[in-house]
Amino acid sequence: MAESFRCLCASTLQWCTLLLVLLALTTGVQAQERRAKLRISNAGFTITALPLLAAKDWGLFNANNLDMEVILMQSALVPAALTQGDIDYQAGVGPASVNATLSGFQTRAIWFSSDKISYWLMAKPQFKTIESLKSKKIAITGLGGTVHVAFNLAMEKLGVNPKDFVLVSIGGQQIQQFISLESGYVDAALLSPPVTFGAQKKGFYKVLDVGAMIDMPGGGLTALVKTIQERPSETKRVIRSLQQAKDEIRKTKPKSLDLIVKLLKMDREAANETYDQFLTTLSPTGIPTRGGMDILVKSVQAQGRHVGRKVSFEEIADDRLATEVAKEMGYKVP
Image (cartoon, rainbow, N blue to C red; front, side, top):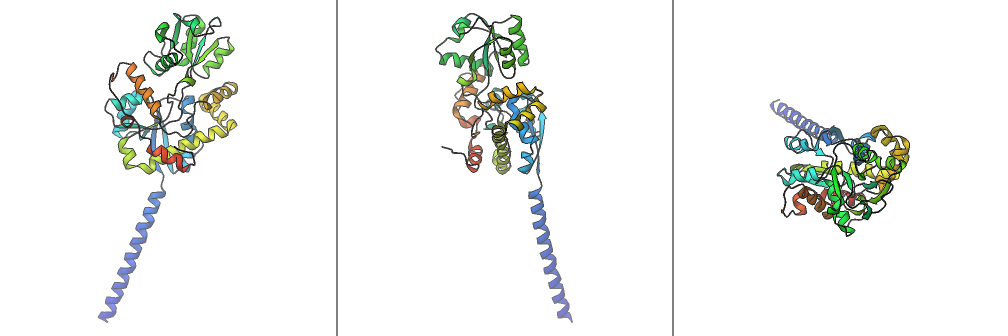
């Protein structure tokens, strides 16, 4: 009797143990299947942010098992928000994010949306060459900023001294630079789509496609070093979502135009022209480049920050996860 009781207890214990193991395994699987809830910041809903907006609107984050919330946030506030864990990623790689890294925040650029910026030098009809604009006033968004650096580099490529021009800093939205041009306050302005197309329709002349001459990142993805190291699988899924969105934008113009009209509040004609121009700026693989990051460092230093400091690629960028994603998606990677 005692022996039978012991056998029964042993058998019951084995069954209980088996049930606990199965429960643990089931719980583990459910935890893995549960979508990671994440937050990504973005400075504004512009054409540069289109891959991010598409990844969210078209369900690509969800398809990669990510529950992603997009948070509008000024670039200056992002580094602290990342460090404190208020957000997980920053949608953007630019002078502000690079300056934050150089200032001590443990962040890295990990993916590019575009490897060129879309800015045209637009002028009054009587000015049709760079030479004709010497000593004339040209509106830009900010002295020492990305556009200023891009303009200077473009002039240097053409063998022209950037100091031969009078650059006027006019802050605010692109429309402010155009208003300055239209009113006659300046003779030319560096404008981006869709404002460029409106300027053309009003008779202003496209003197130079400045963005096409310079490999300068626009958009992208920035993350904490800790996130890259401790959550590589998740980070790769974020990159993959954005890269898939970028591919879809390339392949499906009507669908992309619908998104631009809906989220960026453009009419269909402006959306069409902006889309065509945007395609010329997209980075094929999304892998951060040394040339692009070097130009961003120059942009920061042109603002009088970290002047004279020699910055290595590894200090400000990490291309490993984007490279892995590109290979997994079938891109030819050197």
